[in-house]
Figure 1: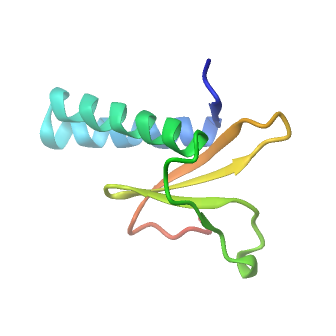
Figure 2 (figure 1 turned 90 degrees about the horizontal axis):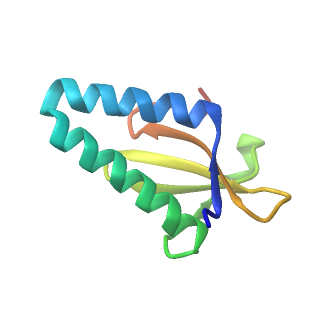
Length: 96
């Protein structure tokens, strides 16, 4: 059973990451990176990844973790599952 949920925004970002990786490094690398992201999501949900609380001054509840060149913003949902809110490239600004 999957214990995380990917938001629509995160899904769009994952698609963009896949397409960019595919254009630059090909199908094999794009697939490997996407699969790695989903493995990271599983590890977030099972608390096997270092989660850093988002600083209170940003006014957003949740956690950040790092996967290769991306930051993953997640939060605990009322259902108890982990919500993957968005995935941003490390050079992107968080509050976008």
